[in-house]
Length: 126
Image (cartoon, rainbow, N blue to C red; front, side, top):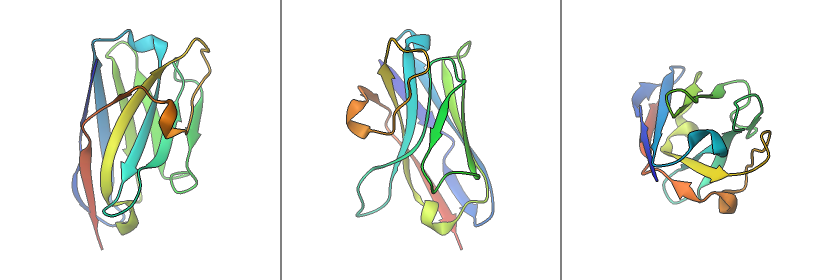
């Protein structure tokens, strides 16, 4: 199983980025997906999660209203659209996947995820 995160970069405060997470080696539609982030000297934290079909999502309070998680099951890819970025959003962003029999399942709990991508760095300048 491989999860390849991409799309990070340097952006000014107020700008936007779209992260992608391309999956391979798994039956994509069996997996719920999540995005997490880790800032320097901080623990990895939940950002957003999405169910297998994409119809159910979950967001951290810090992401609500600014970030949108989505997935394209035909392309085995998940996305995180990030708008109105703030300097405090600076972090390495990771995508993660967990298989689940519940079509509507999604979770913010880091320990429930089985597979992780390598991370993509997002830097927001003030």
